[in-house]
Length: 454
Ligand code: GDP
Ligand code: GDP
Image 1 (tube, helix red, strand yellow):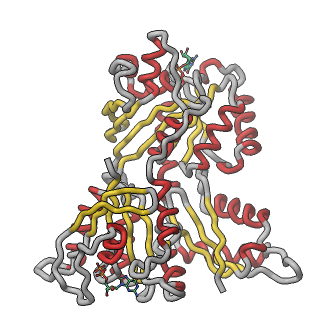
Image 2 (tube, rainbow, N blue to C red):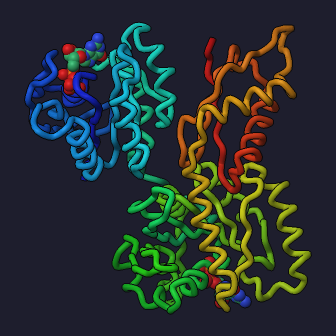
Image 3 (tube, rainbow, N blue to C red):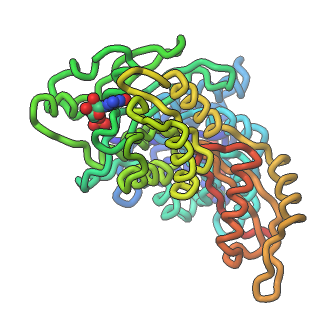
């Protein structure tokens, strides 16, 4: 089955032109006049070796009783509902308009991947629009010209990671259990499922932990192993919040019970990590932070997921204060990328600590989803520059001019600077640590890009 890619954006930004370009046929009507009635179109899009179903949502501009905003909202919602990937198009010549911002608000709330396209960027025309587009909080904008076919290689680069790749079966470093939760809270996350994966090396106690969370031995009574490689879903509730538990390791456990020792590959673990928002990294507290544990944690961080560490088998730990101190010290030293990560002692066997673990998971998603205003960031940046400016390189000062959060989930910041290539890595790390501390982004990978900006 092809992935569905939807094109959304306000009227006249070039959606139909892009649709035509990707479909390679002139089936969409392109008209300069806003107000032309059009139906929603679907076609088979191709870009490089990628093939997908492409949906153009143009047609919003039909004037009738409903407000443009209302119609856009409905159209966008429908497109998102149906899409695996959303291409959000703005007009680089016109810059970011209030309607674009309205769209961005809707799109930031979706769990679907959104690629921000700054169209009409042929030549240098879109440069200003591209910089402004960062402020929409949808990640790095891709400058294209649908009409002239420019920037399509960059679009390919942006699309490609969202397509399934035939992952090779590598050595086992990890196994995974995936939990899919729905939550309602005051953070505006209403209706958006908290997706959680439980990972850890074999025997860390993932299955036991999940069974305990569920409160019954469900994983052992799942469908026959080997019948399907698909995950199974068990609905449950944590403190009144609906939770769907999607389990893959449970199937393997079943297989193990039957004597056919089978393990999940790195590829499968990766898939569950990519599916998740928050990943519980399960450590065996009697032998924590082994090489495999660090590899797994690193994988989760590289995939940009929020992390909570479960120090499992806590019932077996004798000197608990020492064990906790030791674990804390090792995280700071071995996993500086997630400094301050929550570590929750639990026992899958007795159930101790599970409430705290789930609380930490919900909290971790909040941090991961959080957006920090450009105003706060730039106030912080000026204070930093005053007290600890970047060093001069080849006798010239590097100027950091402006900073914004380009994306959340995980938080990704962009700093515009006079000579990005000259800024020492140590200074970038200093900035990242400062951001993490000041804005309390605990247990969360923090990304920072430097861009040239005068
Ligand atoms: P839609 O309403 O978003 O579907 O926009 P259309 O695809 O109908 O395009 C609106 C107008 O923008 C048309 O006049 C297109 O020719 C023009 N257009 C589309 N893409 C580009 C582009 O890359 N560069 C320039 N300069 N114009 C474009
Ligand atoms: P998985 O491979 O990560 O799914 O690990 P399992 O859940 O199969 O557990 C591996 C072994 O550790 C089993 O023998 C479990 O009984 C044991 N185990 C799991 N959790 C705990 C725990 O919290 N305390 C103790 N004492 N043993 C545990």
